[in-house]
Length: 370
Ligand SMILES: *[C@@H]1O[C@H](CO)[C@@H](O)[C@H](O)[C@H]1NC(C)=O
Ligand SMILES: *[C@@H]1O[C@H](CO)[C@@H](O)[C@H](O)[C@H]1NC(C)=O
Ligand SMILES: *[C@@H]1O[C@H](CO)[C@@H](O)[C@H](O)[C@H]1NC(C)=O
Ligand SMILES: *[C@@H]1O[C@H](CO)[C@@H](O)[C@H](O)[C@H]1NC(C)=O
Ligand SMILES: *[C@@H]1O[C@H](CO)[C@@H](O)[C@H](O)[C@H]1NC(C)=O
Image 1 (cartoon, protein in one colour):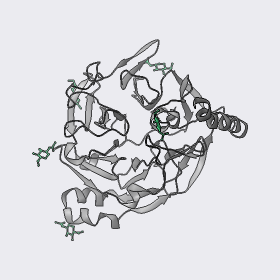
Image 2 (cartoon, helix red, strand yellow):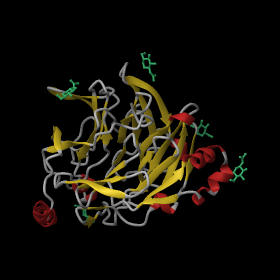
Image 3 (tube, rainbow, N blue to C red):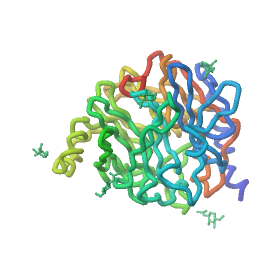
């Protein structure tokens, strides 16, 4: 059983290394024993990581990386110690993404579901947690219980500082959540819209993924970005096909329920992206998008056309990427498709794992992060 399930990966690995070469521009930044699917850095050199925990391992989800000693749980061990019976409002249940925002604080997106595919603990579980990097303590918790369903997978967050709103993708029940960062009020929009739902299962290493019941794995609205001028919101289901909508419509739909009900008139096709693990946007509005079938990163220009930035056999399911102050693109090669949620509880992830960087020669979008 083990051998027969591993075989397709082994065979593909052989084919893969013979077809896809390594690119010397791709540099090892971090070496890890457990998959990490999120990186954020500060200009001062601090580095935060998110453990995906899809390899059967346990331990903290969010950690700060240190040169020369082990990562430490962040913001502290208690927030990272959730277990049945602990308060779901004040512990990270399953963090799906983390990023430093334009305000210089660290934002953690907690699905509120104890494991991939498990029901969300409502209403206290799903939340956006803001951590102050000066005090290393939680500054604010935005509860998302009113805009989350048991089948939701609150996925990722982006910001539109000019209007004080955040946008959050729901990859479990297709939709976008618009959150007012001042009041904490939130609204779901574009629910079950073709642009948030897509129509194909997720694919990696040339194969469609399956969930724990044996059915195809669908992951809905997932990767997203805001253009540096704040005009457009770009988003896609994990299986690809990127749309964009002018943020003015998203923002107005937050206040105007008539507009919210007809919002599906406003998205437009943007780029025919492949099945993707993660994205990042730079100061010029280029979006980097990982191709989980081809072990590549594509670069989408603001006009929606794309080219391949790099293809390298080591870039196996690159998840959430990060553009740092020095013009480097960070690429965590997570091997997520080989993890427990997509292989009926078994993990075929090979260690060590690596986070790579490549020079892109341009820094982050200032409204994304400093
Ligand atoms: C860790 O080392 C890297 C590479 O030498 C350096 O750029 C970074 O600033 C260091 N970070 C810390 C927190 O010392
Ligand atoms: C973070 O904490 C520092 C020190 O207490 C404070 O000056 C700063 O305003 C805080 N930042 C945010 C965004 O809350
Ligand atoms: C959720 O909705 C209830 C009922 O409308 C309201 O009282 C509560 O404040 C809301 N919670 C949040 C976090 O918005
Ligand atoms: C997953 O594994 C369980 C127990 O090992 C087995 O009963 C079930 O049939 C498997 N499901 C699929 C879809 O292979
Ligand atoms: C709300 O949106 C509807 C539909 O676009 C529009 O007709 C109406 O004028 C808007 N209401 C306000 C107060 O802007």
